[in-house]
Image (cartoon, rainbow, N blue to C red; front, side):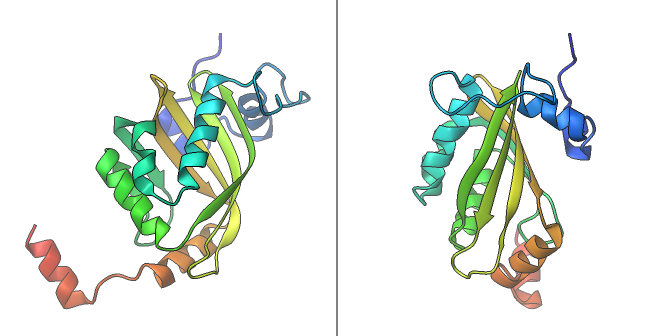
Length: 183
């Protein structure tokens, strides 16, 4: 039996080459197989992520709370103000509140699961301000029917970094330093 992908392997992309990604996205089918169509034959983790995206589409980050384990870790790559690993539901929801200020939308292209991982490929774009429209891949680790971890992979990380710096600038230095010092 294959060993599950570790968190560090997913973060580094190890095992997610063309053949590895096909094996994760097309469970039991190998690189030449076909994905299961949406509906009743889906893996339960795929159904969970579909419901998560339905809640996300509501625009209210609080509707996402029931999808997360209390100790969730959500990693956003890049070199911008929203990048980094968010730990716990409150930090993850704070990230989504910031993201909602840019009117982010998502249109899923492919969702597939194997063991405790789900891979999602979607188009994600901003509406307020417009300016970022790219393909994103997310690796979700599911535990107990909830999302325990998510790792984002941007189709165009340079564009994402530039957009988030424009849309979410840091406070001016004196105010930012005062806020850090008061903690």
